[in-house]
Image (cartoon, rainbow, N blue to C red; front, side, top):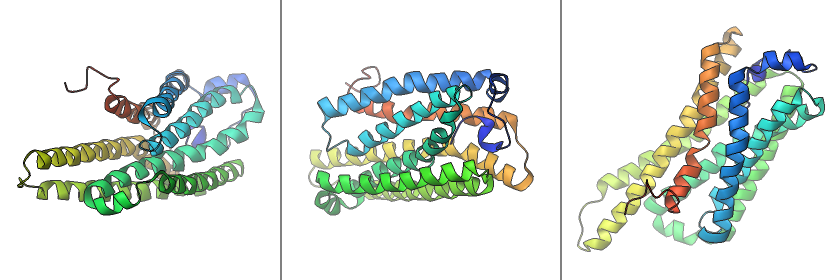
Amino acid sequence: MNTSTENFTPEASTNSTPHFIAQLSSLDICLFSLLFLFGLLTHSYVIWLIITKSGVASEFFNLNLSVCEIATCLNAIFTLLSFLFSSLTRPIHFLKGLTITGRPLFQCLMCVERYLAVVHPVTFLKYKPLRYRVICCTVAWINSLGSCLFCMFSLISNNIHAYTWFYTLQFLFFFSIQLFCLVAVLRVLKQSGPGERGREREEENHMKRRAFHIILITTVSIAIMYLPYIIIGLSFVSSRLFINELIAFSSICYVLAGFVQPVLYFKRAGKLSCLCSP
């Protein structure tokens, strides 16, 4: 989804530069620029670190998420240029499917992976080889492609109601999965008591707490990212009214929440020495 009000104003014209300035406020322009410049740099660095240092197998879902985020960053600059080059309108609508489906889907895969590692370690070890991650990501990209096509055709045809219900149901579905993983890991963590193995038990509990914190942060970030858009969309469907303050707030949340996963990865990789424990 886009961070401008254009999502909910299909009747808006995109043929003139003055209307572009009216459509995109200074806040929108700043957020798009921030998303493109810093987002593209940050996620490109994440991809480079995964390929050269961390290993593709262990961070394969994170790698695909960063690729998806780079497409979102490109969509931001396309949006800024679309009112000068009308031919970019369809690619913009197409790439919105990645922000609606791609980003939360890959975040869910990361949470499910940690859920299996904590709650079902035998199953996790069974499906740990890279080929299973490749299969999951292939299915995820196919679903994201379908979402991109749906978003493009629904927005081109001005079917905003279908578009709104589509991303609302997507959010609820992915958010439910993440909540399930969060509660399941927390439940296992609370049941973990001191055992006979001493230090090994302590390290195992540390791994479980780390998985819980990652799932918790991911779940909170996706809620902050998409919940304002759900409220905006439902308000549009029910009354065709917009809350301008909520639109501005949702834009800020959407852009800033996109940097949560890179920060988590940089911390795991030891690139944020000020946040890493000795």
